[in-house]
Length: 330
View 1 (cartoon, rainbow, N blue to C red):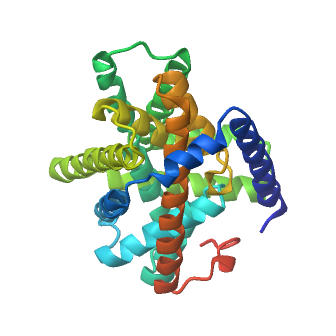
View 2 (cartoon, helix red, strand yellow):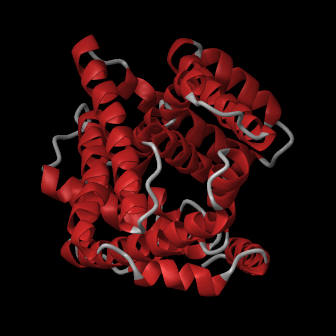
View 3 (tube, rainbow, N blue to C red):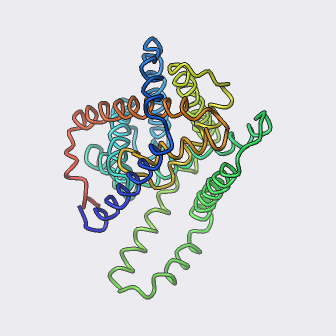
């Protein structure tokens, strides 16, 4: 692993541990354990199915986005998606996104420069959740914390930026290349040529967005459905911990929680998940602190177990050694 990436992971880990220590300081661990001991195990199979289904839907969406390049079997695309999710979980420098491109190159001979834009587009469709969150705000029955509006603004800005990048890539290719050439003109000729080549390949790969209206509608519907399944998973997770909160509140909070993952996290989301979850559900939406903490702790452990188990199984099924990831390119 390159030194810069290793140092970034170390920094993210330290920040995550600091956040976890601060979170523990302001929570009652004994009360959290008390609530977790009373978990409703009868709901766990449903929670498991909902959690995995949300990613299965997203993997099928990626399959459709990828189809202009190659028709990849649904089972293989699911394995690749879950393996990438697992790698992102343990190496939080977006290594999982690079891994998914590498899987496609390794098994289906799709150049990484062609497949990577499909991953970018796939992630952009997840940001549709910000639109749903904004639409829900008028139906929230109590005042939200200012923190939520800051987070909403940040995510909305990212969504607008992604849409703008896609628009420029499709409609203004020559303009983007001209600006890029000016920006990197001070780099050495070797690196300038390499960087401009990557940018041009990325722009050329954005043709996947130029689809028939029917395909775009299917992708949009799948995105909404995945977000709804996510919210339903979280709703039953709250119920499993015997904390009965209105679906619209849980859906709003968890959708915003998932959108916040565009921000850097620690390996395994340690610390960052607990803090952001508390900021959204407790500070922002006014839920009970200890009960909410028990939900995030149990959900973190249960969700992490699912990601690690299915991720490792998927890596095995696609015959990939994670040590081969770093340094792989076209």
